[in-house]
Image (tube, rainbow, N blue to C red; front, side, top):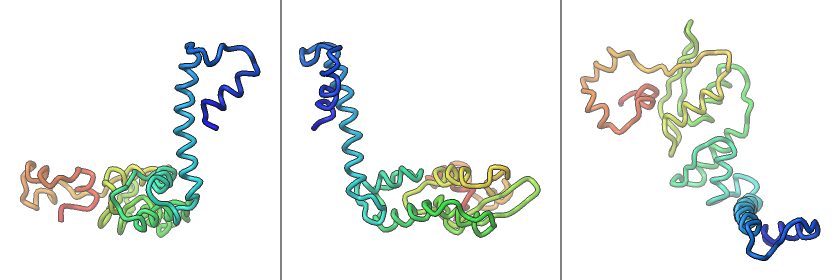
Length: 186
């Protein structure tokens, strides 16, 4: 039975509304029915693949969304599933290794943590396929201990200038400043 028919079946016995007569309430119920229908389709897609290991297509997109990952539809299914499963392991131990693993579950490959007086300074060798540095950093800020300030351990201006690139050349790399700071230029 469709969501719209379910709404009519629930409201008819109440005899409060003039149903099925093209009234404004019918138009409103049609809108609700359409929205509920979309939710019902999404739940059916998720029910067809309740575990990320079995999910494909839209079901896999929903699993990514449920753990806070951006949609990575262009990435191979096994790679997408791996990061989903890493994120489902939460919480990680509150040790240096656990924190580095949590950063890995945020999409940072080879994450390194440097402790300084000001807080934690994070750098990485790369990012998970299909993720931007901004996505990884947003997730990392959510995963890191709230009581410790965290910063990207990007190089200093002097180190950046040592590459001998102009601002236009840096912009032409097509990388965000977050990515350049996190993993460098090379």
